[in-house]
Length: 226
Image 1 (cartoon, helix red, strand yellow):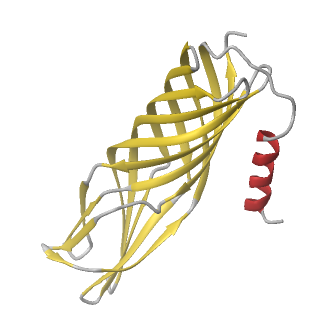
Image 2 (cartoon, one colour):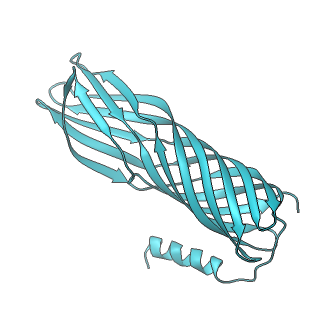
Image 3 (spheres, helix red, strand yellow):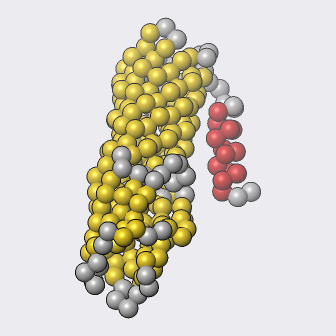
């Protein structure tokens, strides 16, 4: 059994086995998340050298893994809950684009090692054990751009730029006696940003890019008002 199938097996085993209890959901909480990141969402890009555009031959997208911590406060009314939430996360996923301009081969890599989120998580209790959830929020991050040119005067440039994105997600949560576990599928689309750098030959390279990504989270939550 490979790692992905084993991980899914553990998730389903926890969700559909073991005794469950109805915990008091109102009040403060904290938790940790294990995340899988996929740079598979919608993106647009425009690349040029000294004002002349060049095409992208291929794109390599690496799934990444990471985690983070989060906390919030749950307000409950009947079957409904609403939770303002803040989180800090890190991952190692990236997207790399390869292009060619004249005799130069160029690769541009985008990644976001760290990010901060502010979200509203709404939940509806299906029964005493399971809640379905929806998430809407914003994400702040500093993307890292790595540009590499291969020609007679090769170079590598590292730049960073801050960006903000909109996040939407859906999930399910299972409650135990004094903790809860949840799964969340989330899509984040960021603003279009332009960045540039000058190579060893004095050429100005410009990249315009809209990052987007999909995140699957396994969330462990502990109420702080036990």
